[in-house]
Length: 81
Image 1 (cartoon, rainbow, N blue to C red):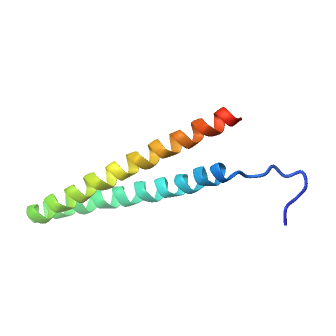
Image 2: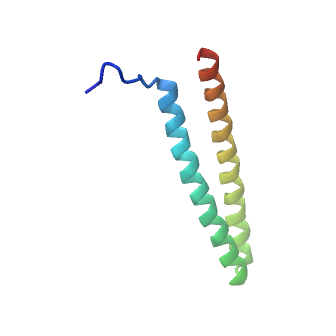
Image 3: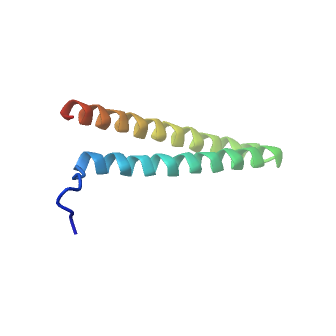
């Protein structure tokens, strides 16, 4: 139920919250991927480690895209502010 004096949350604000959650989840996944790459390297599985590093690189690129998208949304919110 909506309270009469409660501030309304815009779609853009919900987008920022969603992106923040996705960024946090992605950062956790990247941390785990880095750990897996290290385990593969120390375990002598360098070929698989290289593939894992390629995936890690793509994950980092996707994270940077999410952060940029978040920045654009926040700029738009501030302009409307």
